[in-house]
Length: 343
Image 1 (cartoon, rainbow, N blue to C red):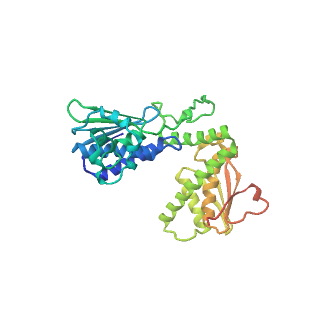
Image 2: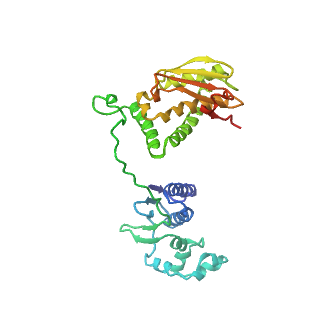
Image 3: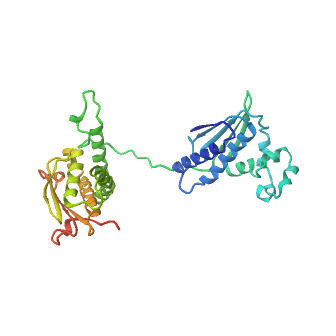
């Protein structure tokens, strides 16, 4: 990551610190002292901006355990040997022990560099950073670099064996040049993810993950339907059914409504958006249940229930879905996915 500061722009310096801090927080190990790293960056850059009197270049690299910040300027600089004095500075000269505006008069050159007029200067940088180096550029200016006091987040290495049986995309979905289009790829991505969760953590975990996705996606779909149809207030059963069919047809599902009543909506389906590949990941049926159930529950004070009576994913010739607008009948309640009306 690289930045350029023209000098004297306090807003740009604040934005740089915020951007660096956000980047470090995303990639650092839990509990890392990101705030300390931000202070190091601020001190190095503000010092360069103040004393160089011109442009400043900042770069951040993170190829090893800890990141390195480099600040380059075109100013008069200082003797890099003075950093040795900074490292050997006694603790009783620490900035928090200095009081009053006259303390600068008693400092030699190394201590001025150490403290800075803010009372922190390179002392803070040397204290917080893991290492601090400086060098004079051949054509003028300085380069000061510090290793920031954060560690990279550990990663788990995964190298699973390839499962070629039943894997997607299907060979017939390939383009003439051997590539795959966006839709076959995304369909394969969703199906294979559901299958992988099922394989590694069991069907309950797969269904829970798919249900969460369905709840989130279904909410957006309902919002879009309301905006397009200019619906305000609770959806009627007829509008709920219309919303279902529209959103399923949009993703190439074959749903139609066979019954709409005050207490339920019944739909059938002859074409799954995931194709026959859904049979390798039946947990994806929970997507339909969660989308339908969430929409119904948000428009029914008693919540909703979804009964998947027939499923293409299990080998049935089609799907039959019953959405109960309220409490489902006692006889089917144990086999129904329940969805609560939001408080």
